[in-house]
Image 1 (tube, rainbow, N blue to C red):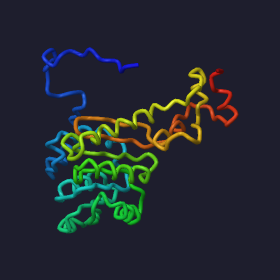
Image 2 (cartoon, rainbow, N blue to C red):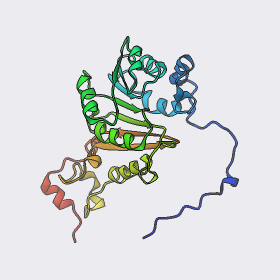
Image 3 (cartoon, one colour):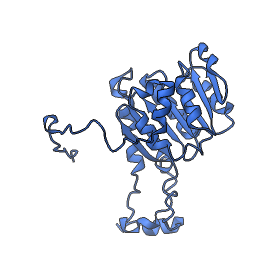
Image 4 (cartoon, helix red, strand yellow):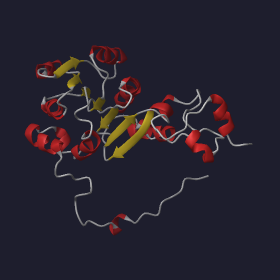
Length: 254
């Protein structure tokens, strides 16, 4: 069956009443810190989305990894925004080591090198709560890095990939195209399970993919993507615990 085609208005019919949206928050601390440190994230308009996802957890976050340092502007902003966190930065340029200090730690290496990434995870005293990929902007690097690091961040951690619009590489392997496949995992429903028994679907079969069990959400904004880790379906406290036999009974009769 072909995909449904939406009949949205043409671009000429859209309204331009305001350049602002409901995302704008006059109390956005990140915007204020960005005026102080001037990271490139500010000019890409990413901070409204970072604020939406990070504002309620900023005091609980213990460990942040930013891939791609270049200057100290971004890592200093994160250091002030997350007052209880160690901020780790990795970059391929040895000159970036000079930006280490305070709660900032810099490691030099290539984000596409699995051995280096493994060493990075071992050097952190805490499992990373947040990973931000603002590194090479090469498609293969972005995909290899998220493939390796996403399973290694904290259970309810957040993984962010910046600059997905102008990334370099094979168009067919565009980072966003690959990330879209995670949506099917988030929306996973076991074959043959009766929708009327949804409240009893408190665990998934053993053969269910890792992503279906461990990714609870993904948010696409212009050129930036947020991936939220969690436990599917266990994070829903309203489900009734179910044994293997209950699972079989919950399946639709064929």
